[in-house]
Each structure stands twice: as C-alpha cells, then as structure tokens.
Image 1: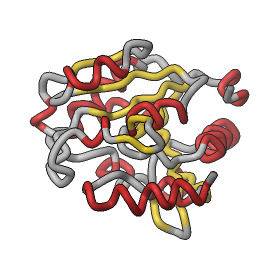
Image 2: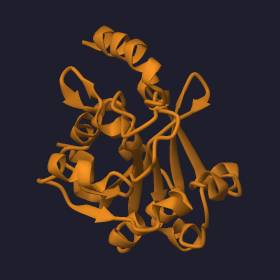
Image 3: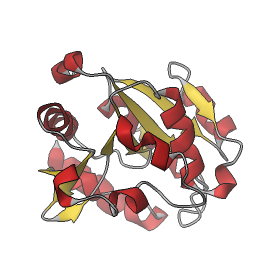
Image 4: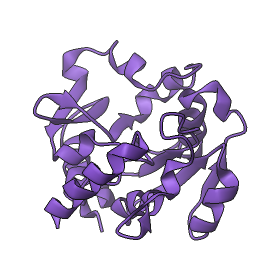
Length: 200
C-alpha cells in the first residue's frame, strides 16, 4: 500500500492501446517469469486507483484484465494522446494522475513511492523520474495541466506540455534504471529478462 496516497487523490492511467509495430505484435502478452508484461506492470501500482486503456489488442488483453477497470480507446490509431485524454477524463477530479506505460514492467514500487512523496511535499505541476539525468516514466501530472493535455492531438504525449513549463514548475526525482526500460523489440526480451534476474 502506498501510504502517502492517504493525503491525495492520485489515479494511475496505464497505457496499453498501442500497436507494437517494432515488436511485431502484442508485446504486452509476452511473458517474463511466466507472467505477461501487462500483468507485471499493473502489479507495480497495486494499492492505487487505476484504469487500463486498451486499443488494438483489446480482445487479447481483456482475459488478463478481468479484475481491472478497462477503457477501450476506439481512436487508438490516432496516437497516444487519445489514450492519455481518455484516462485523464476518468480521473478529472483527482489531484493528479500518474501516466504509466504498459510495457514498462521494471519500474520499482519504491520509484512510485518517491514520485508520490515529491508530489505531496512540493508544489510541482509534474514529477518526472530520472536515472542518471535521463528522463523516464511514469510521470505524475497535476490537475492544473489537465485542460492543456486535453487539447493534445496525434501521436504525442505529455512531454509537449512539460517542455513549456518553467523549471520551478517541474520536480525531478532520482529513481532506478527501471524507469528507463520499456519492451520495444522481441530481440530485447532476453536482455531484459537478464536485467530482471539481477533485481531478484
């Protein structure tokens, strides 16, 4: 349980609507330790309210998400912005939303705890995890940004909005390497499994 959430209303939007072109199929059902990637990712955020936004592979994913709140994005072909906006509307009255990628199963719960703690203690419009100065995910967005994000179009994420903010409006928190690692191509799976085994 994330204790810091007691003081805030934070929702998690897990993006799982993409086509996975570079992977050549639905990467979210590929397995690590005999567990589908999407399931491992969801477990990171146990204890937080969350929705999973699905698209092209809805029929393959639904059996794995029977205990989750799922939103189908019929406009998934139009890009990631459509999924982000659907998720934000679900949590429109919350203090903030954590935007998580369904293909990032190596984020640690400790990373999420750090992000939440910084958001609770500082006046940030966004909290961005970094590892050795490189930006990663998930990113926590304050409610004040929701109107701007709702105007996004096409295959662009929140970075477009974040790049317009002043430095004092952004908070960065050092996290594990897991905030940088997403499952991209099939040939990457073996090296990522090796990385995972080093964490155990």
